[in-house]
Image (tube, rainbow, N blue to C red):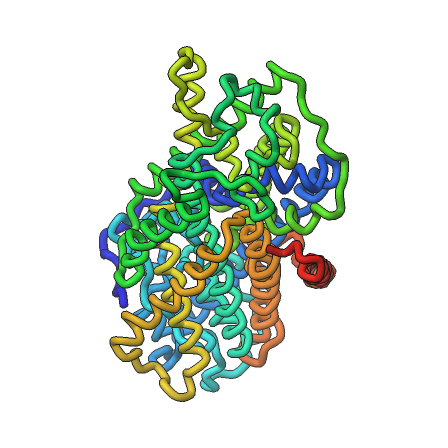
Length: 564
């Protein structure tokens, strides 16, 4: 288990850099499946759904910030009131478990501790020290701010300044503070399922991209990028199970076998890191951020240039059959709630935080629409790949001119872009999943094991194997990144993005206003503009209806043999 972080202060950043970090935080691997999902849903239905899901994600992001402010207020109230915390869970956490960071008045994070990071690595905090342990000690299964029975109800107001977000409370810490033990257990179940899906997506996307570059297919025989629209859909669909054409990569090794070979090599190189602890590198995060932004800019630029050179395709206006896929992909693409504590806490000035984040979401929505529209009008839906970067790959031909050679170089870069970025993130996600599995089983077995450490073989061997076993099995069972992104976003993603933030905010508000322990007025200056019971019901109803529709759709696909 990791201990406290370095005592060296960590500089905070200005609201502008917080704005940039949140933008980079949200735009990730999910966007690579967006053009195909958007084209399947149709441009009108797809646009409406993207607007709706962007708004829903923004709404729950404001609830997450409100919950962070509540945790800060309760923490400061207990400190100021001079109540004994020697036996409280708060004392246990703040001294033995690294999940609270303090930002002092000078704008420096000092005496800092890490966090139980429930986020995938492309969502990892970009402000932390290079020496910050990646995954610190997890907290126990009991709530933090429990009624110790040593005080009477207060019945007055917590000062608005106490709600200032100067302590970093991660989502897992908030769940332990505000939820019943059953809720804490369900929280860790949802987080682990989400991370399993995240890890499976990475485990498939990396070898699939390598296989396309090494093996290639008939799509690479075009001499001009605009000729891509003339390539047959069978050739584009080489990696789908409905392809009737078997192509060989090298010798008698076909594409499917080559995928298994590259998958095995990748797993042998990446999986051992799950058995160790790593340190985050701000330089590595900066490197992957640059690669990602350059790649997305190139994809939009190449697609736009081809639209200018040739006639566009005509995508459908609306197709209800494409709704489930775009729903899941969009939720995954707008995911940021679990990483907001690491993004918002170190911002020096948080006034106007909600409209600033709103501007971020507006820009991200505009970028996603640009990416989706250019892809949908450039290529027909049956020729769009579930990893959009693979649509730009072409081999270097002996008779290539300089322009075609440049397109080939850019194509290689884009095709290998998921390999570069996801390979660096795979160990971080697997370690994060490992630590959350430890927390899950500690909640489940707390009656029998208490706070005692796990036996060495269980902690250092069994949990890493549990973290890797399911994603590896999925990677050997399917290459359908589109399906994995959709399922991960539609089910555990709905819990992480919708249910957890809104329930954290309302449970925290209830603790302050209605519980016997506090019974105080609520004057949270970071109160969400949607902090009304109507929006709680709306989010939960939207989540329920959406999941019912998705389950029915999946059941129909299974019945028709289309769910692969």
